Length: 298
Image 1 (cartoon, one colour):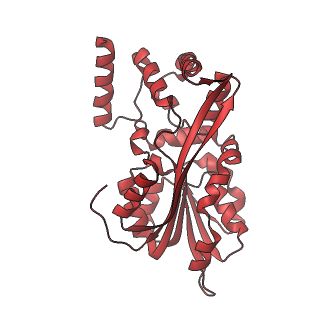
Image 2 (image 1 turned 120 degrees about the vertical axis):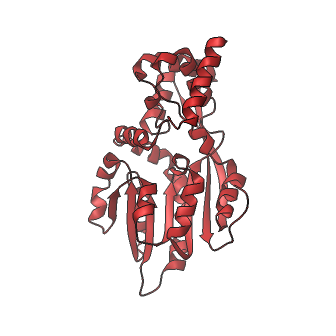
Image 3 (image 1 turned 180 degrees about the vertical axis):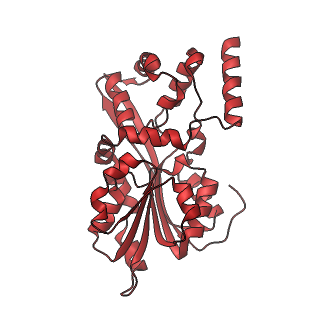
């Protein structure tokens, strides 16, 4: 008990000092999974489609001016490709911190997409451009939402629209507890903690609250959940690692391979359901228009 108390006190101290998994760690994670990220797209792309609405682009289109679209944290370019398929006059800028992810977008340059290898927040700070539509797929929890949504509003044209889909509270049920237990059992192998769970929206109400605070008006908002089943704990963990769902967790440890067996042991104990090992992905998505009045509550 004393050992665990000391461990958690140490982790809290690191969090307060901001010695946590950071953007460089996420970059390394997504560089690692770039070649297998298509596994995530194959299963979750259909949900991403819910923020890519032709009607939104049509409402922003005139015969003279193309719609300026920002594919924020674009990954391998799924959203940009979907927008291109609409065959509407658009100027697309696709930004991502992972150079390996952008390598899988190289063909988009031939289709007129401007590819930018840069951390998203830094890009928004530095760019002089404004956009009519910002689309953000699955990246919101990697940023401080109070900062990011303010940046979105500053870079949107009047009446501009943001579409976002993100993991929400309750996703990957029990995985946070599993990692905390393994960390407590292996304190000498822990390099830095991870606090991404603090940045997950609490369903539709949480997401709407975040956006209204920054003066956005909801156009459409909803949530959902999907569960995947695997034959073995190894298959479940491989899915989470190869799709980026556990991005940053390997960077928690000095030597991930030394604790992998402990993680698998906990998955076997916590995630077994009816002859399979199950993991859930809870998500929330919304489309918001720039044009409200800043709120008072975060």
